[in-house]
Length: 193
Image 1: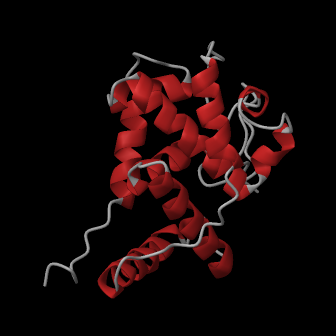
Image 2: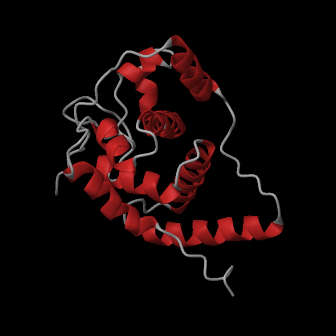
């Protein structure tokens, strides 16, 4: 029996944060909106369903149970879009960080799918770091944190990913995420017809 691959989270740093930023992040985490996609029209809904079908096939080896796979993808899609992030980037980051393992824990103590450090639950949550093993909670924290770092880095994805991982300015981690992001890019051929 092979041992699971180690989680890759680095030594992400707890940084001082202005009260306004902390309050905004806390509000983002506390929003209890369920991950139910809404669409402006039928074409958008059909494009989403095509994406969901293709991503489900790609993820089958990592998450074999169909219902778990659909719920995971629906939640990733929802949380990435809620934070104005590219879904393929979030999936690439999850692949690098936890290899899609919900209960992954890194040597630095980061937890869950997006390898969120427990200090974030004190900074913007309720302090219960066990919640980081809940799929939606982990994805919401991870996406909100990634969006926060993207703002701090003025949209520079390379620096954002390094900050997320605790390796800011070093190429291996951002390059790994970018390489894995390519696995999750969706080209909707039906909408181009």
